[in-house]
Length: 397
Ligand SMILES: *Cc1c(COP(=O)(O)O)cnc(C)c1O
Image (cartoon, rainbow, N blue to C red; front, top):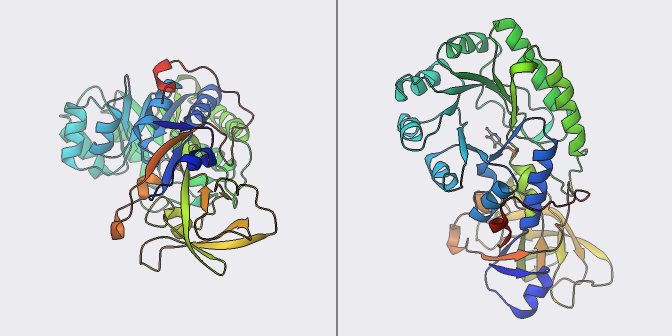
């Protein structure tokens, strides 16, 4: 890969037609090392946030070797990572996917949230005696900016019977939940863990594992969450109060928090109309969440020689390159007044749910790929020192 000290340095020698996805591998490693060092249990990576091979390699090099996968395609990507352990945590799976995951790919951990889905896992694995089964329970997503409620999860009424039935088949039995993505209040995890404790008591079923899912936040212009250390304190406190604490493994599945700050997209301004900038990536590229989830992303001018434009600032809106009027990013994106056609903008914090949500609509969707060694535009881990990686191959990106 092409490695550059920053975006402007790359642009000094290149004038790419396509938008550029810029990866900062050190940011992936630093986030992963922080989670491995500070989470009181096992850290899984939620593959859907960014399944690019260099990202998976950096995570593995930093000690994250367990992966939450939701499809056979994700299983095939992640299985290429040495020593990867796969957790098939999508609560609703096709029978064919369950059978292939178990037989061909060695998957032993499955989530379910109903009698039907549990029945499918048991049938397609021939009632195997080496299964780890996780009951996904519904929990309130009131503290998150992207609630995932309503789609999955057993209710308080359904959960005890499901747990009891799964206990009779599982070698290891677990409970899992998801508090919603970009959970900005640490208590989200404490409240859900309390709910898990109540389920254990009400069902009288002991569990061997509790997987607290993802939802850990990253930093954006519209969202400045508390430090992740406060989330860990909350989790430790709530897990300590559980009756099963001694023989129970704790797991988590961050996606966003591990990769959000590791990628920027560099776009070119092709036209300016008032405070609207027409750029060459957008809602159908790496900026889906800016169009459809109310997200704001940090932006700066990286045109060589124009990085420190004086003058005032303007609150811009962006339009992406496709002809769909939904290809509109309200932002606002705060940039110098003097931005004009031909300028390049770095838009940061798109490493989670950026490239993976892009499509080829209207003939766009191809990116240049570069590696940058400077700091992410915003960080949750700025005070964390990067440790040498255990797998030296993974540094040579
Ligand atoms: C999406 C997802 C995650 C990751 O969520 P983030 O908010 O990105 O941390 C974790 N677990 C499951 C089951 C998911 O569906």
